[in-house]
Length: 407
Image (cartoon, rainbow, N blue to C red):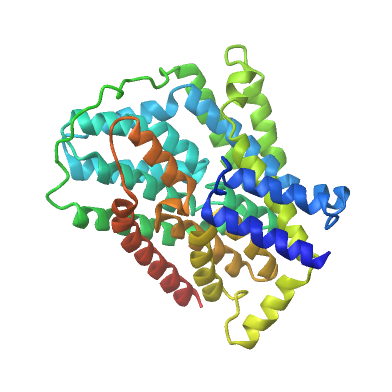
């Protein structure tokens, strides 16, 4: 059975790294799901053990936060915030600074992918109409969302997993991760200004598809969403289980006289939740072989310990750009010592910062690029990497400096 487990794991992660299977219309989630099913079908894992390997607190927290974020998106809250910032389009440098600051802050409080979904159409249309080059502003949105989401446990899916599995406190996570995130955000702004110096106002033709089809602001429902976020953040500082708190707030939003349940749940990213469940099962199949323990012992013998903060930071940055940050974190948490929270914080920061390196590093990048294309704006792999590589290198240098300072 060990041979089957290793083969299935290797094939699944190779498929996730490629992003597709030649000849099939499978994406990363489909590949992970097939890998999980194969782990059970081949007898590597009994059905009960496979189901028990899924961390339900992590899944429930992710689900509940998606419901809260859906409330703000449906109510037009994200759109209203983006429109307000877009009024500064006549002052490009200030516009970019406020846009990155706001998207980074919102991504720290809610799932960053949803922030990008809400902001991208408005930013695309606003920059085109103002005669600005939309590319640096859209890159700034994606990169700020990635960096800002690293600051808290609830900023992105991989941080939620790290926080739940590592039993990390919300306040301590924030105190450790917020300072390097703020510095990295400022650094990303500086890099974009330098790269696009003299090119912020390149005129691009507005395509016919660039219509205003975003949600209209419903002030009552938006205030309800904001109140839900405030309640969540306040309750996360209490000893109550985060997933229970988030589910309770989500239940309050679902008990609405105006917003249909189907509309809210329709904005939940079931694709991402399926990916998480499948990866839990695939990783559990690998654990039955004893390979993770062997790799940890071998790396320590070679003088490289992934259980230490610096080693984990470098390894997670590399692996996140091979298989994307969520699958990388799912694998790497198995190497961490529960008694050393610094290594867990390092994994959260590095895996998120690394998402800016290339397009496939994070889902937020793909969301922005795909949404921008609907408005006739093309952001190529090379264009993204031209900004993403220096931003990521600077962010990682800030992280390593932060670790050295604290040590």
